[in-house]
Length: 153
Image (cartoon, rainbow, N blue to C red; front, side, top):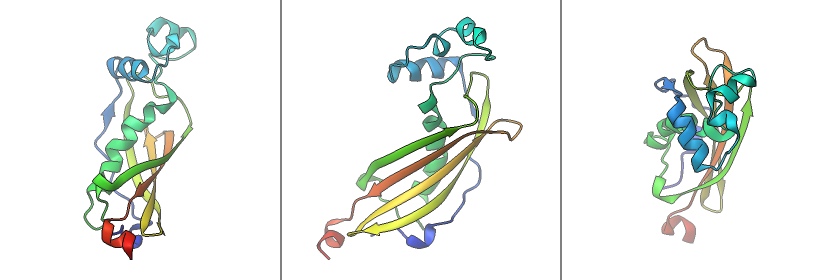
């Protein structure tokens, strides 16, 4: 079954707040080989004017994917996650995420396009801090491969 094109424009309620911690920042930084001291050493981050450890720019995906789960799990959208290939991810930051931030993410479906039986689903996730100030926008595109019947059609 292909993705429902009528899903474009759908917005979901905010995901549960996410607490950004030093441990998670350090673990993510190690995983993506981000070696800047501001990701690992509190004093190095403070020397740069930050309140605490600074998350690498791509860390916003951790928060965004929690919100994007609402899209993938929505039966009315029709995404078969076993057929998903990640196509693109873009980040626009207002300020870095730092340890101690409690953030909330809200996802919407920007577009659903059909390409040769496959579907391209683009989501936009807005991440805000506890006061509602914008932090990051994550734009993600997933390719949902057609099943065998759709591909043959």
